[in-house]
Length: 401
Image 1 (cartoon, helix red, strand yellow):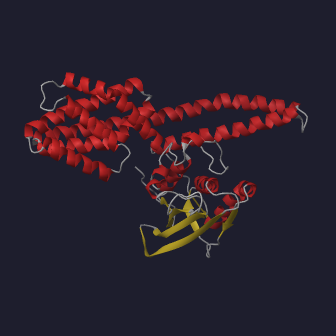
Image 2: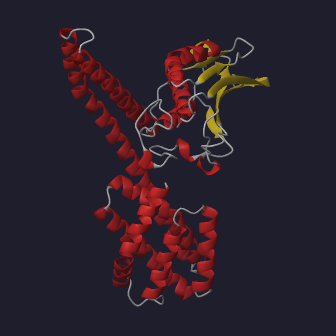
Protein backbone atom coordinates (compact mmCIF):
# COMPACT_ATOMS: atom_id res chain seq x y z
CA UNK A 1 0.00 0.00 0.00
CA UNK A 2 2.89 2.36 0.73
CA UNK A 3 4.02 2.08 -2.90
CA UNK A 4 0.50 2.86 -4.11
CA UNK A 5 0.26 5.89 -1.81
CA UNK A 6 3.64 7.21 -3.03
CA UNK A 7 2.57 6.80 -6.67
CA UNK A 8 -0.64 8.71 -5.97
CA UNK A 9 1.23 11.51 -4.19
CA UNK A 10 3.65 11.83 -7.11
CA UNK A 11 0.75 11.93 -9.58
CA UNK A 12 -1.06 14.65 -7.61
CA UNK A 13 2.10 16.73 -7.15
CA UNK A 14 2.71 16.58 -10.88
CA UNK A 15 -0.86 17.60 -11.72
CA UNK A 16 -1.69 20.05 -8.90
CA UNK A 17 -1.32 23.18 -11.04
CA UNK A 18 -3.38 21.75 -13.90
CA UNK A 19 -6.11 20.60 -11.51
CA UNK A 20 -6.29 24.00 -9.82
CA UNK A 21 -6.46 25.85 -13.15
CA UNK A 22 -9.20 23.53 -14.44
CA UNK A 23 -11.17 23.95 -11.23
CA UNK A 24 -10.88 27.75 -11.35
CA UNK A 25 -12.01 27.72 -14.98
CA UNK A 26 -15.13 25.66 -14.23
CA UNK A 27 -15.93 27.46 -10.95
CA UNK A 28 -15.12 31.16 -11.53
CA UNK A 29 -15.87 34.10 -9.22
CA UNK A 30 -15.57 32.12 -6.01
CA UNK A 31 -14.41 33.53 -2.69
CA UNK A 32 -11.58 30.97 -2.37
CA UNK A 33 -8.80 31.81 -4.84
CA UNK A 34 -6.34 29.52 -6.63
CA UNK A 35 -3.89 29.68 -3.72
CA UNK A 36 -6.60 28.40 -1.38
CA UNK A 37 -7.41 25.51 -3.74
CA UNK A 38 -3.69 24.69 -4.14
CA UNK A 39 -3.31 24.62 -0.37
CA UNK A 40 -6.24 22.19 -0.12
CA UNK A 41 -4.70 19.83 -2.70
CA UNK A 42 -1.36 19.90 -0.86
CA UNK A 43 -3.22 19.11 2.37
CA UNK A 44 -4.88 16.19 0.58
CA UNK A 45 -1.46 14.92 -0.52
CA UNK A 46 -0.11 15.14 3.04
CA UNK A 47 -3.03 13.06 4.36
CA UNK A 48 -2.89 10.20 1.84
CA UNK A 49 -2.16 6.98 3.71
CA UNK A 50 -2.99 8.40 7.14
CA UNK A 51 -5.64 6.92 9.42
CA UNK A 52 -9.21 8.13 9.14
CA UNK A 53 -8.97 9.77 12.55
CA UNK A 54 -5.96 11.87 11.51
CA UNK A 55 -7.60 12.79 8.21
CA UNK A 56 -10.77 13.92 9.98
CA UNK A 57 -8.79 16.02 12.47
CA UNK A 58 -6.84 17.63 9.62
CA UNK A 59 -10.04 18.46 7.69
CA UNK A 60 -11.72 19.89 10.78
CA UNK A 61 -8.74 22.19 11.40
CA UNK A 62 -8.78 23.22 7.72
CA UNK A 63 -12.50 24.02 7.86
CA UNK A 64 -12.12 26.03 11.04
CA UNK A 65 -9.17 28.12 9.83
CA UNK A 66 -10.10 28.43 6.14
CA UNK A 67 -13.90 28.57 6.05
CA UNK A 68 -14.63 29.65 9.59
CA UNK A 69 -18.33 30.39 9.96
CA UNK A 70 -18.83 32.06 6.57
CA UNK A 71 -21.88 30.45 4.96
CA UNK A 72 -21.14 32.04 1.56
CA UNK A 73 -17.56 30.81 1.71
CA UNK A 74 -18.75 27.33 2.72
CA UNK A 75 -21.18 27.27 -0.21
CA UNK A 76 -18.40 28.27 -2.60
CA UNK A 77 -16.12 25.62 -1.11
CA UNK A 78 -18.80 23.00 -1.70
CA UNK A 79 -18.87 23.97 -5.37
CA UNK A 80 -15.08 23.93 -5.59
CA UNK A 81 -14.79 20.54 -3.87
CA UNK A 82 -17.33 18.97 -6.21
CA UNK A 83 -15.58 20.42 -9.27
CA UNK A 84 -12.13 19.41 -7.99
CA UNK A 85 -13.35 15.85 -7.39
CA UNK A 86 -14.70 15.68 -10.94
CA UNK A 87 -11.46 17.07 -12.37
CA UNK A 88 -9.39 14.51 -10.45
CA UNK A 89 -11.75 11.72 -11.53
CA UNK A 90 -11.63 12.79 -15.18
CA UNK A 91 -7.85 13.06 -15.18
CA UNK A 92 -7.49 9.67 -13.47
CA UNK A 93 -9.72 8.04 -16.11
CA UNK A 94 -7.60 9.62 -18.87
CA UNK A 95 -4.14 8.82 -17.52
CA UNK A 96 -4.46 5.81 -15.19
CA UNK A 97 -5.66 2.25 -15.80
CA UNK A 98 -9.19 1.67 -14.40
CA UNK A 99 -8.18 -0.75 -11.63
CA UNK A 100 -5.39 1.49 -10.33
CA UNK A 101 -7.56 4.60 -10.80
CA UNK A 102 -10.17 3.04 -8.51
CA UNK A 103 -7.50 2.32 -5.87
CA UNK A 104 -6.21 5.90 -6.18
CA UNK A 105 -9.71 7.26 -5.72
CA UNK A 106 -10.36 5.11 -2.68
CA UNK A 107 -7.20 6.49 -1.07
CA UNK A 108 -8.62 10.03 -1.43
CA UNK A 109 -12.32 9.37 -0.94
CA UNK A 110 -12.40 9.63 2.87
CA UNK A 111 -10.55 12.96 2.88
CA UNK A 112 -12.90 14.45 0.29
CA UNK A 113 -15.94 13.10 2.14
CA UNK A 114 -14.80 14.68 5.41
CA UNK A 115 -14.13 18.01 3.68
CA UNK A 116 -17.54 18.00 2.05
CA UNK A 117 -19.23 17.15 5.33
CA UNK A 118 -17.46 19.95 7.21
CA UNK A 119 -18.33 22.49 4.51
CA UNK A 120 -21.92 21.24 4.43
CA UNK A 121 -22.32 21.66 8.17
CA UNK A 122 -21.46 25.34 7.76
CA UNK A 123 -23.55 25.80 4.61
CA UNK A 124 -27.31 25.40 4.19
CA UNK A 125 -29.48 22.32 4.67
CA UNK A 126 -30.15 22.33 0.95
CA UNK A 127 -26.45 21.87 0.22
CA UNK A 128 -26.36 19.07 2.79
CA UNK A 129 -29.11 17.24 0.89
CA UNK A 130 -27.21 17.69 -2.39
CA UNK A 131 -24.11 16.17 -0.78
CA UNK A 132 -26.07 13.14 0.37
CA UNK A 133 -27.44 12.57 -3.12
CA UNK A 134 -23.96 12.88 -4.61
CA UNK A 135 -22.54 10.42 -2.10
CA UNK A 136 -25.25 7.89 -2.95
CA UNK A 137 -24.52 8.27 -6.65
CA UNK A 138 -20.80 7.83 -6.08
CA UNK A 139 -21.40 4.71 -3.98
CA UNK A 140 -23.72 3.33 -6.66
CA UNK A 141 -21.10 4.00 -9.33
CA UNK A 142 -18.42 2.23 -7.31
CA UNK A 143 -20.74 -0.72 -6.66
CA UNK A 144 -21.58 -0.94 -10.36
CA UNK A 145 -17.88 -0.82 -11.23
CA UNK A 146 -17.10 -3.62 -8.76
CA UNK A 147 -19.91 -5.80 -10.13
CA UNK A 148 -18.77 -5.21 -13.71
CA UNK A 149 -15.18 -6.04 -12.74
CA UNK A 150 -16.21 -9.27 -11.00
CA UNK A 151 -18.27 -10.35 -14.02
CA UNK A 152 -15.35 -9.63 -16.34
CA UNK A 153 -12.89 -11.59 -14.19
CA UNK A 154 -15.25 -14.59 -14.03
CA UNK A 155 -15.78 -14.63 -17.82
CA UNK A 156 -12.09 -14.08 -18.56
CA UNK A 157 -11.09 -16.90 -16.21
CA UNK A 158 -13.54 -19.30 -17.89
CA UNK A 159 -12.22 -18.31 -21.32
CA UNK A 160 -8.63 -18.97 -20.25
CA UNK A 161 -9.46 -22.58 -19.43
CA UNK A 162 -10.05 -23.57 -23.07
CA UNK A 163 -6.60 -22.73 -24.52
CA UNK A 164 -4.96 -23.98 -21.34
CA UNK A 165 -6.68 -27.37 -21.74
CA UNK A 166 -5.43 -27.59 -25.33
CA UNK A 167 -1.87 -26.80 -24.29
CA UNK A 168 -2.02 -29.36 -21.51
CA UNK A 169 -3.32 -31.95 -23.97
CA UNK A 170 -0.38 -31.40 -26.33
CA UNK A 171 2.04 -31.57 -23.39
CA UNK A 172 0.57 -34.95 -22.38
CA UNK A 173 0.99 -36.24 -25.94
CA UNK A 174 4.66 -35.28 -25.82
CA UNK A 175 4.96 -36.94 -22.41
CA UNK A 176 3.70 -40.27 -23.78
CA UNK A 177 6.25 -40.16 -26.61
CA UNK A 178 9.24 -39.17 -24.45
CA UNK A 179 11.59 -41.56 -22.64
CA UNK A 180 11.13 -41.61 -18.84
CA UNK A 181 13.93 -39.67 -17.18
CA UNK A 182 14.98 -37.93 -20.41
CA UNK A 183 15.55 -34.21 -20.65
CA UNK A 184 12.38 -33.88 -22.72
CA UNK A 185 10.39 -35.65 -20.00
CA UNK A 186 11.76 -33.20 -17.43
CA UNK A 187 10.72 -30.27 -19.62
CA UNK A 188 7.20 -31.69 -19.98
CA UNK A 189 6.97 -32.19 -16.21
CA UNK A 190 7.89 -28.52 -15.77
CA UNK A 191 5.11 -27.58 -18.19
CA UNK A 192 2.63 -29.75 -16.29
CA UNK A 193 3.54 -28.07 -13.00
CA UNK A 194 3.00 -24.70 -14.65
CA UNK A 195 -0.38 -25.79 -16.00
CA UNK A 196 -1.48 -26.95 -12.54
CA UNK A 197 -0.48 -23.61 -11.03
CA UNK A 198 -2.36 -21.73 -13.77
CA UNK A 199 -5.47 -23.84 -13.15
CA UNK A 200 -5.26 -22.99 -9.44
CA UNK A 201 -5.00 -19.26 -10.18
CA UNK A 202 -7.90 -19.41 -12.67
CA UNK A 203 -10.05 -21.29 -10.16
CA UNK A 204 -9.19 -18.68 -7.51
CA UNK A 205 -10.22 -15.90 -9.90
CA UNK A 206 -13.56 -17.60 -10.50
CA UNK A 207 -14.08 -18.24 -6.78
CA UNK A 208 -13.39 -14.65 -5.75
CA UNK A 209 -15.72 -13.38 -8.50
CA UNK A 210 -18.52 -15.64 -7.28
CA UNK A 211 -17.94 -14.38 -3.74
CA UNK A 212 -18.12 -10.75 -4.90
CA UNK A 213 -21.34 -11.51 -6.76
CA UNK A 214 -22.83 -13.33 -3.73
CA UNK A 215 -23.17 -16.42 -5.92
CA UNK A 216 -21.38 -19.00 -3.77
CA UNK A 217 -23.31 -22.27 -3.70
CA UNK A 218 -22.86 -24.58 -0.71
CA UNK A 219 -23.42 -28.33 -0.84
CA UNK A 220 -24.01 -29.21 2.79
CA UNK A 221 -23.20 -32.58 4.28
CA UNK A 222 -22.44 -33.76 7.79
CA UNK A 223 -18.89 -34.94 8.51
CA UNK A 224 -16.31 -35.28 11.26
CA UNK A 225 -14.36 -32.03 11.51
CA UNK A 226 -11.19 -33.56 12.96
CA UNK A 227 -10.94 -36.10 10.11
CA UNK A 228 -11.28 -33.27 7.60
CA UNK A 229 -8.50 -31.28 9.28
CA UNK A 230 -6.26 -34.37 9.23
CA UNK A 231 -7.07 -34.90 5.55
CA UNK A 232 -6.01 -31.34 4.70
CA UNK A 233 -2.82 -31.72 6.77
CA UNK A 234 -1.99 -35.00 5.04
CA UNK A 235 -2.44 -33.41 1.59
CA UNK A 236 -0.06 -30.57 2.49
CA UNK A 237 2.46 -32.58 4.49
CA UNK A 238 4.95 -32.80 1.58
CA UNK A 239 5.12 -29.00 1.35
CA UNK A 240 5.76 -28.65 5.09
CA UNK A 241 8.38 -31.42 5.01
CA UNK A 242 10.18 -29.75 2.11
CA UNK A 243 10.51 -26.60 4.20
CA UNK A 244 11.27 -28.49 7.44
CA UNK A 245 8.27 -26.82 9.09
CA UNK A 246 6.51 -28.96 11.69
CA UNK A 247 2.73 -29.25 11.22
CA UNK A 248 1.03 -30.36 14.44
CA UNK A 249 -2.67 -31.19 14.83
CA UNK A 250 -3.96 -31.08 18.41
CA UNK A 251 -6.90 -33.49 18.92
CA UNK A 252 -10.23 -31.82 19.53
CA UNK A 253 -11.04 -34.04 22.49
CA UNK A 254 -14.50 -34.96 21.23
CA UNK A 255 -15.95 -36.41 18.06
CA UNK A 256 -17.49 -33.28 16.53
CA UNK A 257 -19.68 -33.59 13.46
CA UNK A 258 -20.66 -30.42 11.63
CA UNK A 259 -22.86 -29.46 8.69
CA UNK A 260 -20.85 -27.64 6.01
CA UNK A 261 -19.65 -27.81 2.41
CA UNK A 262 -16.73 -30.17 3.00
CA UNK A 263 -15.00 -29.48 -0.33
CA UNK A 264 -15.05 -25.72 0.18
CA UNK A 265 -13.97 -26.06 3.82
CA UNK A 266 -11.03 -28.23 2.73
CA UNK A 267 -10.11 -25.50 0.25
CA UNK A 268 -10.34 -22.79 2.92
CA UNK A 269 -8.31 -24.69 5.52
CA UNK A 270 -5.66 -25.53 2.92
CA UNK A 271 -5.25 -21.90 1.94
CA UNK A 272 -4.84 -20.76 5.57
CA UNK A 273 -2.29 -23.51 6.25
CA UNK A 274 -0.30 -22.63 3.11
CA UNK A 275 -0.40 -18.98 4.14
CA UNK A 276 1.02 -19.94 7.53
CA UNK A 277 3.72 -21.99 5.81
CA UNK A 278 4.70 -19.13 3.50
CA UNK A 279 5.34 -16.74 6.37
CA UNK A 280 7.02 -19.22 8.71
CA UNK A 281 10.80 -19.70 8.32
CA UNK A 282 12.37 -23.10 7.73
CA UNK A 283 12.49 -25.04 10.98
CA UNK A 284 9.39 -23.30 12.33
CA UNK A 285 6.09 -24.75 13.47
CA UNK A 286 2.38 -24.51 12.61
CA UNK A 287 -0.19 -25.80 15.12
CA UNK A 288 -3.86 -26.48 14.41
CA UNK A 289 -6.21 -26.67 17.37
CA UNK A 290 -9.94 -26.32 17.96
CA UNK A 291 -12.29 -25.37 20.74
CA UNK A 292 -16.06 -25.65 21.04
CA UNK A 293 -18.46 -23.16 22.59
CA UNK A 294 -21.90 -24.64 23.13
CA UNK A 295 -25.05 -22.65 23.74
CA UNK A 296 -27.10 -23.43 26.83
CA UNK A 297 -30.13 -23.98 24.61
CA UNK A 298 -30.39 -24.33 20.79
CA UNK A 299 -31.41 -21.17 18.93
CA UNK A 300 -33.02 -21.76 15.53
CA UNK A 301 -31.20 -25.08 15.09
CA UNK A 302 -27.86 -23.54 16.23
CA UNK A 303 -26.23 -25.28 19.21
CA UNK A 304 -22.81 -23.61 19.31
CA UNK A 305 -19.63 -22.68 17.49
CA UNK A 306 -16.28 -24.32 16.78
CA UNK A 307 -13.18 -22.11 16.66
CA UNK A 308 -10.41 -23.60 14.49
CA UNK A 309 -7.10 -21.95 15.32
CA UNK A 310 -4.04 -22.03 13.03
CA UNK A 311 -1.02 -20.67 14.93
CA UNK A 312 2.44 -20.28 13.42
CA UNK A 313 5.90 -19.19 14.50
CA UNK A 314 6.31 -16.88 11.53
CA UNK A 315 7.11 -13.23 10.97
CA UNK A 316 3.73 -12.04 12.23
CA UNK A 317 1.43 -9.27 11.02
CA UNK A 318 1.36 -5.59 11.95
CA UNK A 319 -1.88 -4.74 13.82
CA UNK A 320 -2.89 -2.15 11.21
CA UNK A 321 -2.76 -4.87 8.51
CA UNK A 322 -4.92 -7.46 10.29
CA UNK A 323 -8.03 -6.40 8.35
CA UNK A 324 -6.34 -5.52 5.06
CA UNK A 325 -4.93 -9.04 4.56
CA UNK A 326 -8.47 -10.23 3.78
CA UNK A 327 -8.87 -7.72 0.92
CA UNK A 328 -8.41 -8.84 -2.69
CA UNK A 329 -5.11 -8.29 -4.51
CA UNK A 330 -3.36 -6.92 -1.42
CA UNK A 331 -0.08 -7.86 0.19
CA UNK A 332 1.79 -6.65 3.24
CA UNK A 333 5.12 -7.53 1.62
CA UNK A 334 7.32 -5.21 -0.43
CA UNK A 335 6.15 -5.61 -4.03
CA UNK A 336 9.72 -5.11 -5.29
CA UNK A 337 10.68 -8.36 -3.51
CA UNK A 338 7.76 -10.34 -4.93
CA UNK A 339 8.45 -13.92 -5.96
CA UNK A 340 5.57 -16.13 -7.09
CA UNK A 341 5.37 -19.26 -4.98
CA UNK A 342 2.76 -21.20 -2.98
CA UNK A 343 5.17 -22.48 -0.34
CA UNK A 344 8.53 -20.65 -0.40
CA UNK A 345 9.28 -18.47 2.60
CA UNK A 346 7.63 -15.08 1.95
CA UNK A 347 6.61 -16.29 -1.52
CA UNK A 348 4.10 -14.09 -3.28
CA UNK A 349 0.83 -14.75 -5.07
CA UNK A 350 -2.11 -12.90 -6.64
CA UNK A 351 -3.51 -11.98 -3.21
CA UNK A 352 -6.72 -14.02 -3.47
CA UNK A 353 -6.21 -16.82 -0.93
CA UNK A 354 -7.38 -15.18 2.29
CA UNK A 355 -10.23 -13.23 0.60
CA UNK A 356 -11.53 -16.55 -0.75
CA UNK A 357 -11.25 -18.11 2.71
CA UNK A 358 -13.24 -15.23 4.20
CA UNK A 359 -15.90 -15.59 1.50
CA UNK A 360 -16.25 -19.33 2.13
CA UNK A 361 -16.37 -18.95 5.92
CA UNK A 362 -18.89 -16.10 5.82
CA UNK A 363 -21.06 -18.02 3.34
CA UNK A 364 -21.32 -20.68 6.05
CA UNK A 365 -22.47 -18.07 8.56
CA UNK A 366 -19.07 -18.01 10.27
CA UNK A 367 -16.26 -15.50 10.59
CA UNK A 368 -12.48 -15.37 10.29
CA UNK A 369 -9.95 -13.08 11.92
CA UNK A 370 -6.25 -12.95 12.67
CA UNK A 371 -4.35 -12.07 15.83
CA UNK A 372 -0.71 -10.97 15.87
CA UNK A 373 1.43 -8.68 17.98
CA UNK A 374 3.56 -7.30 15.16
CA UNK A 375 5.56 -8.16 12.04
CA UNK A 376 9.19 -8.84 12.88
CA UNK A 377 11.55 -10.94 10.75
CA UNK A 378 14.09 -11.21 13.58
CA UNK A 379 12.00 -12.23 16.61
CA UNK A 380 9.21 -14.09 14.71
CA UNK A 381 6.24 -13.26 16.97
CA UNK A 382 3.93 -15.45 14.89
CA UNK A 383 0.23 -15.16 14.01
CA UNK A 384 -2.95 -17.01 14.86
CA UNK A 385 -5.87 -17.30 12.45
CA UNK A 386 -9.30 -18.08 13.87
CA UNK A 387 -11.99 -19.74 11.76
CA UNK A 388 -15.28 -19.79 13.67
CA UNK A 389 -18.03 -21.98 12.23
CA UNK A 390 -21.57 -22.59 13.51
CA UNK A 391 -22.60 -26.04 14.77
CA UNK A 392 -26.06 -26.97 13.52
CA UNK A 393 -28.39 -29.73 14.68
CA UNK A 394 -29.45 -30.31 11.08
CA UNK A 395 -28.66 -28.94 7.63
CA UNK A 396 -29.17 -25.14 7.73
CA UNK A 397 -30.76 -22.76 5.31
CA UNK A 398 -28.75 -19.50 5.28
CA UNK A 399 -29.72 -16.31 3.52
CA UNK A 400 -26.39 -14.71 2.60
CA UNK A 401 -27.73 -11.69 0.71
